[in-house]
Amino acid sequence: MQYTMLKSKLHRATVTHSELEYEGSCAIDGVLMDAADIREYEQIQIYNINNGERFTTYAIRAEEGSGVISVNGAAAHRASPGDLVIICTYAELSQQELVAFKPTLIYVNADNRITHRRSSIPVQAA
Image (cartoon, rainbow, N blue to C red; front, side, top):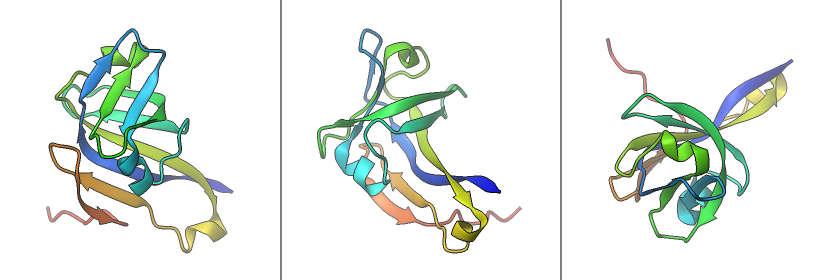
């Protein structure tokens, strides 16, 4: 049996550009891609915190250290500059692979600079 697991995420990244006439995809600062183990052309899910939109596209590499999160093409209708988004990747894992599996969770500030990293989501008290 295969399980679809959260592989990595960029949490609360700020959209810097929204380019409707671009060919498509989401350009992500190369430093953030490397930190979150996101490969160029890898499928990503984007969850827009501001408007609730959820959509699928693929990642392309933006200049390292630029802070760029550019939602392009048709997806530009779903995110605007200034919106906060969560960008996630998923992986198919076997039961044996789950034993040692930990996701890569990258948290950023308003300038899309890494503030901290985790490999699990803390449990919130009710």
